[in-house]
Length: 259
Image 1 (cartoon, rainbow, N blue to C red):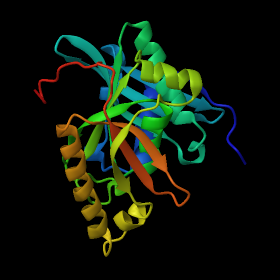
Image 2 (image 1 turned 90 degrees about the horizontal axis):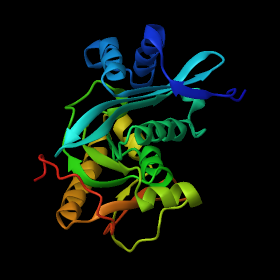
Image 3 (image 1 turned 120 degrees about the vertical axis):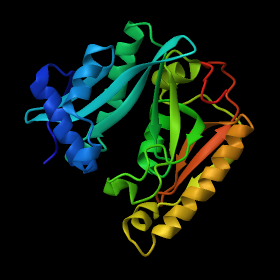
């Protein structure tokens, strides 16, 4: 049976925030020590962050959590977590939650939302780059340490940083036409479809780590050359490919951490 209609809105009250904590546990299966606690959801809501929820007839089926940040005097939002219940995935719900984040941010005069994402996750990378219009030009090695989530497969938590420039021509073109503006691809980084199976089994995990280490080197070298992730391709067999080129728009907040 297909999921029923889903409404997205701001979460309100402790019961809805508790439901976010429970869904986080369901999706990532973190140990209690690594769960974002209820207090953090409450604080985010109070200090200018966002807690967006997706609700069907049964209750909460997805959420997005962000917290405010500053860089060189500019306010932006860091979208720390997005979760969708398994039976509602691949329905566009994650994108809808992100677009509500964008709408809310623009209403408050905020032009940038950032988040980290695992470059080995093919579907999520495609969403971020091709369906939202985010770019990436920073890479962090083992950002959160070795996590307890089975989704990480015991690998270092390497992450790309998505920059979602909400008023850029890139994003506005994508939202108007369904496609990112054309660009000249100078290099690419590949992710094999088998990566999920390799991460899940002890005997093949080293193959997944080899892919991660190879791709890390390629990303760092490309970003040093001032290239950015501007496109993402998936083939008929499920393999992913990041396309990197030069972003002609000049949106940037100088970052103390990369200066």
